[in-house]
Length: 335
Image 1 (cartoon, one colour):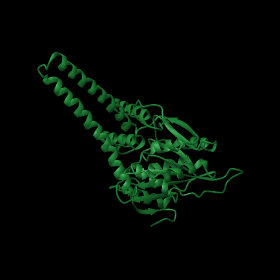
Image 2 (cartoon, rainbow, N blue to C red; image 1 turned 120 degrees about the vertical axis):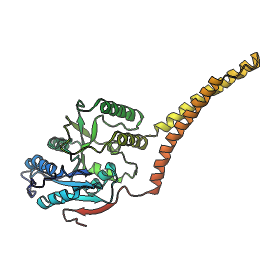
Image 3 (cartoon, rainbow, N blue to C red; image 1 turned 45 degrees about the horizontal axis):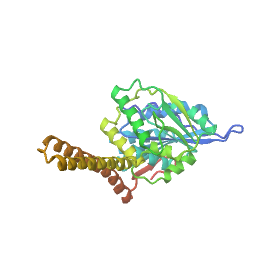
Image 4 (spheres, rainbow, N blue to C red; image 1 turned 90 degrees about the vertical axis):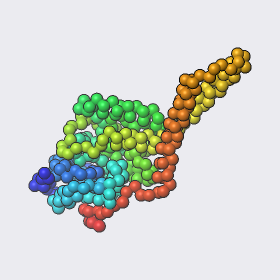
C-alpha cells in the first residue's frame, strides 16, 4: 500500500559558508511501476544529503518510463512537499537506457548520479562520491564487492558477461559496476552528444574516459517491489551491450571463415588424391551429413551475427529519437 504520510521537509539551499563554493548534484532516477519506493527513497535521500548543505545542494529527477501504477501520483505528491523533486514523464516505456538519457538531458547539476529507486544502490555512498569528485575525479564508480546474495545462476551469468564483454570490446568496462556512479558535468555533456540509438550506457561511460575513482559497497535487498529484469531481458541487454560496443564478433568470423575454407580445400585435395590414386570408394553417408550440418550451422550462426548488426544499423539510419517526453514537472518546468 502506498504510504504518502512520511514526506521530506522542503529546505532552501543556503549561501556558501567560508570559501566552499556551492554545487548542485542531480540524482537521475528511472522508475517503472515503483510506487511503493518513492516516499522512502526521497526521505532517505534527504537524510543523506541534509548534512552536506549548504555546500552541496541536490535535485531528484525522476524519469517515469511508462509506469502503469501510481508512480506518477506518488512523485507529484512528493513534489508538493519538496521543490527539489522533479518529474519527466515519457510517453511510453522506452527502456532504462533511454530513461537515463532523458534524465541526463533534464539534469542541471554540476555532477550527476544515476541511482535506482529500490535503494539497492545505497544513497549513503553519495558523500564519499562527492569527496572523491571534489578531489579531482571526473567519474566515481560504485563497485559491488560481494555477490553472495545473488543466486548461482545470476553470479555465473554476470561473471560470464563481464569477461565476454571485456574480451570483445574496444574499451572494457569495470567489473561489477552498474549505472550507479557520479559523473562530472563535463562528462555528462559529452555523453549527451553521443548519438547511438542502441544504447549501452556502461560502455559509453567507459568510452569517454577522464580521471576515474571508485567506492565499494555490498548491495542490500530491494526496499520494496520486484525487479523487472528477467533473465530473458538480461540476455537481450547483454547482446545489445556487446553488439553496440564492438565489431569483434564480425572480425572473428573473418578468421573462422578463412580457417574453415583452408580446411575445406585441404579436405577436397585429400579426397581428390585418394580418388586419383586408389579409385572412388563407396561414399560415406555419415561424413557427408556431418560436413553439411557443420558448415550449414556455421553459416547460419554467422548470418545471425550479421543480422544483429544489420538490425542495429537499421535502427540508427532511421534516426528516431531515443525517447518521447509526455510532460515535465517541477522547478518551473511544468509543461
